[in-house]
Length: 147
Image (cartoon, rainbow, N blue to C red; front, side, top):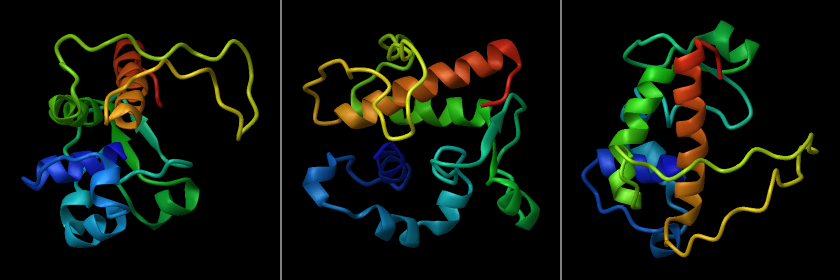
């Protein structure tokens, strides 16, 4: 849902909660495919790919990367895009809320990591993902580590 909000914001469209427009993410990807391919946040897989602490303008994607695990994004680029979309989902990028707590121990793939703090915002899902990605990107840059 965060990727959807970013595409809407970048395209100059109103950023609305998912319930407001329904499942339009695939349609947005088709309409703005070239824009999506230039985005470190959008042109990434939930289950594969990586971000590295190197600044480059657009995600890297070729057959070898796709066969080996997915696109390669920049943690710098991801952080810029997170800061861009933040105000549209009710986050001040200069003073974001604390990131979600890490799980107390290992979890199964389908198991929730921890209880999600209550957020009555219509963008609660987007905000939760934003906070986790923001924490990962800032940690990646501080430590020089890959996400």
